[in-house]
Image 1 (spheres, rainbow, N blue to C red):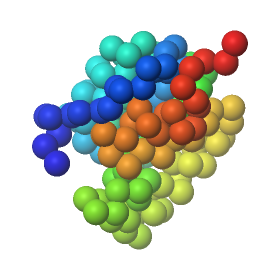
Image 2 (image 1 turned 90 degrees about the vertical axis):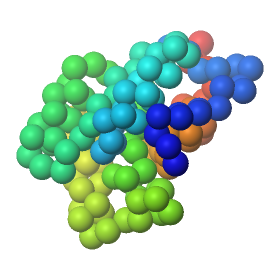
Image 3 (image 1 turned 180 degrees about the horizontal axis):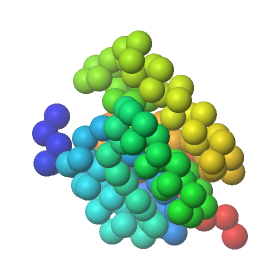
Image 4 (image 1 turned 90 degrees about the horizontal axis):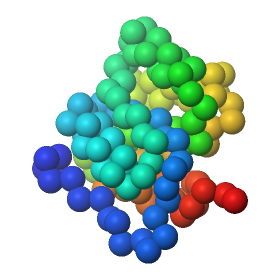
Length: 135
């Protein structure tokens, strides 16, 4: 899939707005495109590239402590949900487990959002958080 041609569905007439979303994955071009798209839809979105090392873990902890997030979106390379393009490996399974525990320890009130690919970001957020902020 060409990452420069990010085409997230925006067909929903009741688009979620205002949710505070922290998202991360392995690819910089995807993170930048997703952040731009989510912000254009009214999300308070922060997306970044996560590395599978101590520096990545420290960055994730710092981002989680920066604000209270409604949801934390984990990209398909890391979460193993994109079996076609990025099948899970022993390394990514260990990484994903570590990431989940970091999120649980540092943002226990945030919902976990597993994203299959860039086109799935908005549907994934809607699956987990709903289509609009609660009243």
